[in-house]
Image (cartoon, rainbow over all chains, first blue to last red; front, side, top):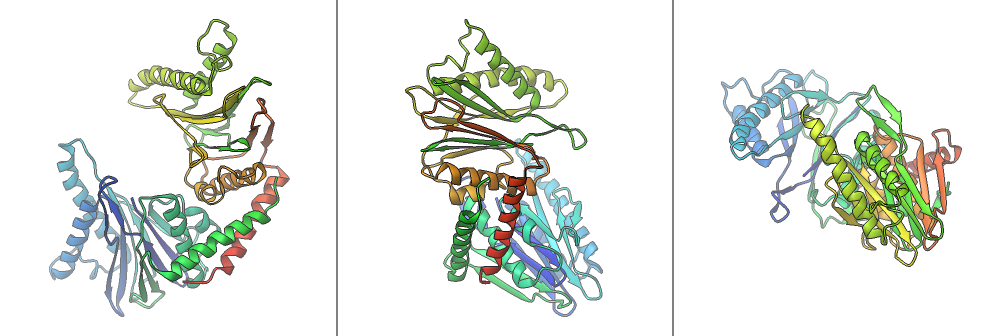
Length: 240
Length: 240
């Protein structure tokens, strides 16, 4: 499985993904699930993926091909709006899923994938979409400023408590990392290293990226500090 | 859906369940999901249920019938060990599921249910089992002293951090309630009131039960205090 979370805040877009991929418990590998596209000063787009690796890799490869083909109508670097970017990704994902499903069906198997697509184009608003395997999508709004794919339940409570549209980038980054930390602790199918990225409002470029390996001292410290805080908070709660 | 959690600790067995049942989003009702059986001084048994209400109600009705039928070999109040209690519940659940599945199949639908069965019989150890729809089961152990059914992911992180076999009953009760609180906040299909019960080690009776309605001031205070503690703890965490 996977855990990816994207926040669409007043101050910008934040993205965090794990990298664990498995085909059965004895075939575990590390694959990047966050893909960044930019034309600095004009647009910045991030895509995060969950689900069948064969589907997500093929979809991303075709999206990259379309960007390099000047005649393609499916370039996310040339689409005039973020809505059209989401539509291109949705159509590509749906096409690839249908192709692969036809092959899988012969073996009575299924494969699916979903994606988070976020970004901003010059003159347009920041937008973030969750694209379903069928190619349709939903959009983050100020009422629900975050989207998750993969193993989303373990890390949802902390987001529900902390994240609002006007949360600062620093607080939002912390909340995302703690949300990921809860997921890592409770679910083996989600694993380090992590990929983190920020697209600040109106920056029109990828403002910051960071890969966080399992040896990262800062992340370990944060994780331990959070455990200790929770333990102490727990002790302070009066029984019912 | 449902959230039920059972703890098997050195000091005793604790059980907590919600009561929300839904058939579609516009048909929501309150049904007890915790069922207690005791022959005080000889045995105490608790069963919690998740899944299709038609299956769980029929299974519980037949278990009750078997208790009243002096000739029945399927009485959980007469079974010589907790293992055999789990086997009786598993067989009954599997039989009912198969019967109902035959009816559902005609409509291309499926129905399933799972249960947590816990208790102690005089002279035997406390034991707790998770019974699957197929009737097979797994058992809680000192390494994994809790079992969950239904919407188990939201409330798992707090249990993973706090619960050990030697956790006190008071701390365990608090952790269960906070685990339920996280689930209630993040998932609409889990709802108040809650049913709580304790079977203390070697008490051989239901030591304590409590129904916690949504108007319960203590639970509200605990829930708000936990939110506030989390918010403050979050503020104290240093950014990465």
